[in-house]
Amino acid sequence: MFYLNEDVFVVSGPVRHAVYNLATGKLYSITDQSLDVLKRLKAADEAGQSPELSEGEAPVRRFLEMELIYPPAAPHKPAPCEAPKGKPALGINFAWLEVCDRCNLKCLHCYEEANDGASGRMMAWEDYLHVIAQLKAGGIKKIQFIGGEPMMHPRLKDMIILARPDFEFIEVFTNATMINGEWALFFKEHNIHVAASVYSYDAAEHDKVTGVSGAHALTARGLALLKEKAVPFRTATVCMDGVRVGEKQGDLFSLEGKQDPVRLVGRASLTLLNKDLIARKIITRAGWFSRPLHKGSVRGAMKRHNCFGTKLYIAADLEVYPCVMERRFSHGNLVGHTLKGLLQEDILEMTKDRIEGCRDCEYRYACFDCRPDSMSRGRFDKPWYCAYDPTTGLWDDSLTDKLLTQKEEMLFAIQGG
Image (cartoon, rainbow, N blue to C red; front, side, top):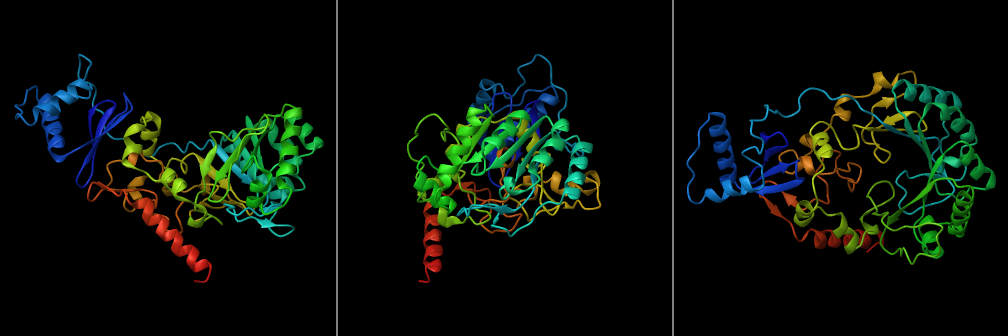
């Protein structure tokens, strides 16, 4: 990596290279020849000289000047800007609290593989007190109560009341089937936000995902009570093969813009994705160069993982993970420990520089990485949904078809073929 300007730098790959222009949000792919021109221009500028360029190299310089990449647009040379060094601040700003892993539904894709009925774990009150004390000491101001179904914990109200004075944002993520008038009033009185999982406007389609007949009706009732009490709530949905979102009915809730293709973790597998959903997940050439770079995200990706460096998930048994879906990485167990002493820097500061197949990729700092969405691959493996091979500089336009073939083979095996 080397900088051309304060917000412009080049990341080299095995055969191609990328120019990141954080000032304009643009990402460019360049060849070895263009990279050589960039290096000579930079070296000549630092020496106060003007290098001679061949006829074939002149367009590179014109492109750089037109895009204001180099030479700098400012009348003075920018101060030297090196790649970020040193250990970043932990910067944890959000925590999921799994108060139980029990659930009253049986969702096909459950990322937590939650147990139904009376089985499963409940976070003990004494453990909860320790968790809250550690989150307060760590300066974490935003928390979300999750399960399983968090409303199955008999002391959830007590937990919320205890936490309320010390956190600026508290949300309960629920399937909303257990919300009654008393709960809706409680959420309103204590300024609690609610997130609810809804899979379709159509009751039969929603119930097909949850495995429980009548679940949609109970969820809709719960959301109606929240709306009646003016409790702020949002809905989140997961799209999967064979489940129709359907047509919006009324103004109780909307699933528009919230349709996340199912991630392959927990009970979810490739069998729940169809061709359209696979295509939506795959990292393609068109996708890279059509969306603007986000300066903060790119800078952050040089120092830490896009999720692991800012979030924590504390399970019902007090095991501390970096992500609500990720149990292959663990900071350790909080029982008898402080959060500050437990957190592992190699997890907090993990970047794409440690991922097989990504560490040499010129696009790695522009890439969002969902580690748990791994399709049972190794925890440091390249994402299965990436179509780019940095060793050849080529994009695999047939990746969707290859994954569909793999899905058919999985279904054949499941059906005992």
